[in-house]
Image (tube, rainbow, N blue to C red):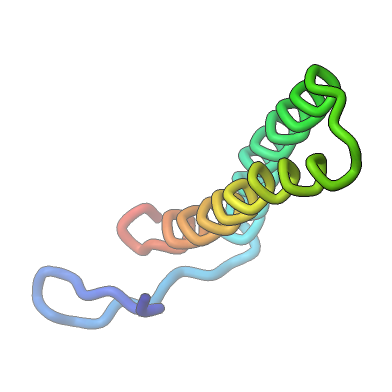
Length: 90
């Protein structure tokens, strides 16, 4: 993905990176990622407790749940950065 975007006339517009946009970016990422990770760990804890999993099945369940969660957290960060620094939004 490019760090620049084009307006209607073909000019390259620079992304707006200020303290305010970075604060908004970090705030959005912290809010959404905290919720994602909280619910992922709650699901992991509930399933492991319900099925009384030993260490190996727990590690497999951990990978099954937390790998997609880590991908979702990274994707939230990318989308939040693009949205907060987009010149059309500022």
